[in-house]
Amino acid sequence: MSTTKKAIVDPDKCIGCNTCPLIDPDTFEMETTSYKAIVKPTAPPVNEKTEMACSSCPVNAISIVED
Ligand code: SF4
Image 1 (cartoon, helix red, strand yellow):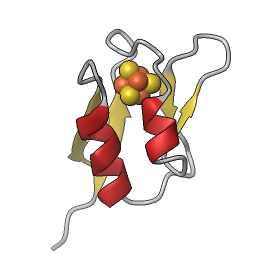
Image 2 (image 1 turned 135 degrees about the vertical axis):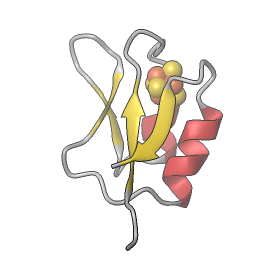
Image 3 (image 1 turned 90 degrees about the vertical axis):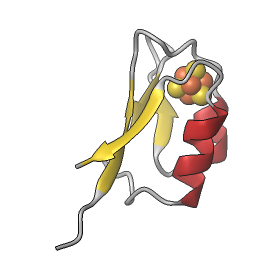
């Protein structure tokens, strides 16, 4: 059985740097009032761009977890 993975953002860590939506705009967007990154409801399965965004976050706010 295959497992799927999803990205999650810790809003307490996110500093709103806008890096993750630039790298993976299909998965991440900035929430317009808090200006913290959120995972889109329409996000595709975790892919190379998602992993790149995760590793590029300056405060390690993004985790990739089993869905
Ligand atoms: S890269 Fe990290 S700090 Fe920057 S917006 Fe995304 S989650 Fe927030």
